[in-house]
Length: 429
Image 1 (cartoon, helix red, strand yellow):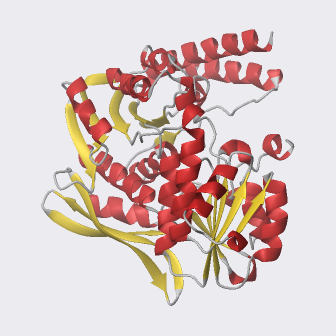
Image 2: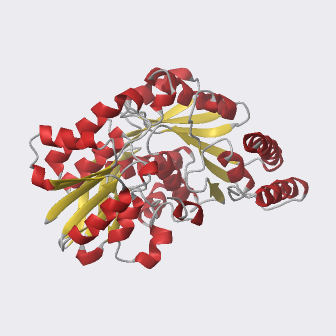
Image 3: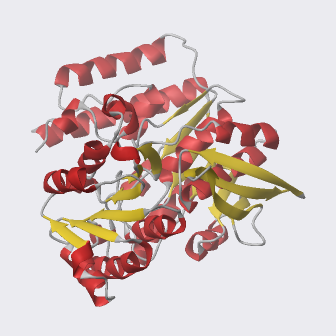
């Protein structure tokens, strides 16, 4: 009965969304890929907000229910039928009575199973589609017959482009770059590739004294080479998000210098390579939103590049990898040996991370394993010392944010700094 009601509510909200889009005619930017969707969506929003009234998907609302909630500007009612009814009434009011509505919508579009994107493409019409990256072992792959099948599912979003719409592609991902052959629309690219329309280069960690504070890089656009600074984050993933945002600014003919200035002030989303202050004057790299092999490997490589007295990697299970599970975790363990001093693994699948690290001759005395994030949090709380750099990463179901919370210096700000701090999440086991 619950599933039937959910389908009915979803269909009503999608119908209302169609009517709202027809009434207010906003420009739409849709973002998909297997990694970097939310960070890219938020960076694009930050840049556009300088120039226009814009709304973005809340958090990572990218599903069949999340998209209409964003379009209608409504909250997730979770399991409260009364609030869902109120949402439907608010949607009707938006249609019947004129409101001030955003000129631009920035929508994150995800897929969890075959057919999801086709459903979205059947009713959404876009001005810009941004394709981030699809690694060799993407998240959710266990629900698809093959990687090729998942790629085709993602590529279906391109069909939503209007005749004068623009496709923005990650030039460093060959699979994504090949998608330019799927459309006659104008294509713009971004990345570190020499022929990218928006080209990044010279990426580095920047420090204030001995304290790492963020990242710097340069962007080449239309013959100009300009410096970009992003504070409070590490990792190349944020550079890709910034380049995608600047590619949107390029398409929309916004001032590139003002767009870069907005990125310096960009408040990156929680749980995505976010730099936080920890107890005992430690530094946390909080990457607890979710995990996949390519994202976890990138996080470890970033950890290896940052100067610190002692580097600790706390890694939880990576879920939804199907037959790739064992190999992906072992590979991560081998990479941990090269980039960290202490390895803490969490969850039943993480035994393969431990195996990979031991197979790469990481000392057993420097590897600690725990069944769940609560046990690991207790250990890390008593283990972290002054000068430590602590990376925390794992799939959403592992609840690795509990570990970050344990060693977070400013716990009162946890609702703003960490993922999954809503009552609906905190109340779960």
